[in-house]
Image 1 (tube, rainbow, N blue to C red):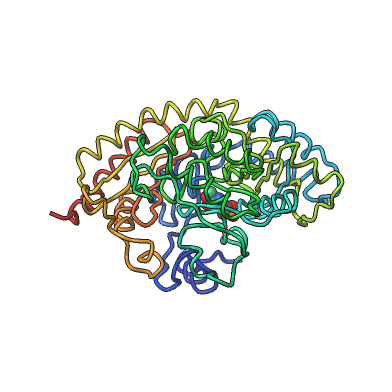
Image 2 (image 1 turned 30 degrees about the vertical axis):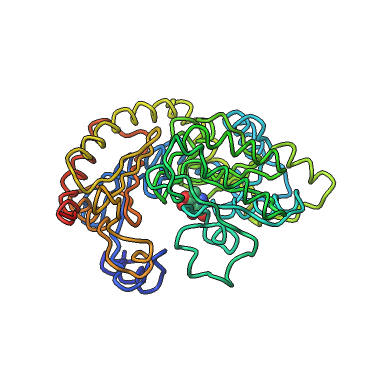
Length: 447
Ligand SMILES: Cc1ncc(COP(=O)(O)O)c(C=O)c1O
């Protein structure tokens, strides 16, 4: 069979397949043919530094050998049996998960995406509590299906309003100490944003769960003040509401701990994750629950499942990924890398008037652009994103691509989350490309 030319690959991809979260017109994807460690290569042989680990998921770097071998061996030994059977790979993974997850989360439902992990969490929370409502926050993303998009605060939900989503989800203000949605200033605020969640619970009744990204990911790398999560834990306990930590993006050493909640010593009732669990080499999601949640289903029908639940081929690379993360001491490495990149990004803020704020935890960094540092007005809005208005952040990342560096942008900020195997010299390369491209934004700053 004659291989397709690159032009054919692009033509068929854009004509016959969907490009996600975008208007289809004008989609002109790079044809990627290879990827290794912190780089990927296009069909012209040009190499790009992957400064966001694709979608903040290739944590061990591309083509991790142990992960590939695990997939190959599992495909040979037992590629598939249904979820009703016991398998060695399922037990081996469960053993390892108990070791690395926050203590007390020891019963697992395996899915094939973060979206499905959150769907499972909502159903479990509703069945277990007998209550309906889910509290989420505006600056959030929890997945693309009818339930998980309903719980998504960002504009990817808008097209589904009001009919295409599950009822019963309500939104709390997010924690954002740079641009507080309720116009407070930390620490004098008394963490009003979390106290307001209690007000919501008390006034709504029928609240089954609160779902949150412990550190908000795509929507800006928003790090809560130290009081936030412990206080939310207290509020949930007081009202018999389950706390669901969505660690799809923040899990797997990204924030300098195995899971972001570990930074504040908080154990949620349910933790969902995906992405880095297999180094993104095979689709796998996880919904982990405590014994208290799990025990409800001893005598009640667990009304949930998938053909691909606990699919052996998806579980084997998770075992390999966890072993690799331990071998490489990746959580500690994320802290070291964060200490290296943080001052460099803050130095960019000194130099570039278009940067409003730099924030990060471990090797998870957000850089927010503003037209005006005083008013903190962004260059673009969520409405611009949805309407297809060209975004300034995309111009910046476009220039970086020309210079061989790929970095994720969303509305008016960037998310920097390279593979945790990145070298300091590669960080320098990425930061230099960012530095150069930021002149595009600086030129648009209000005088
Ligand atoms: C915080 C969070 N939750 C859920 C999801 C959905 O995961 P998936 O894309 O694997 O369905 C994502 C994806 O980016 C995410 O970042």
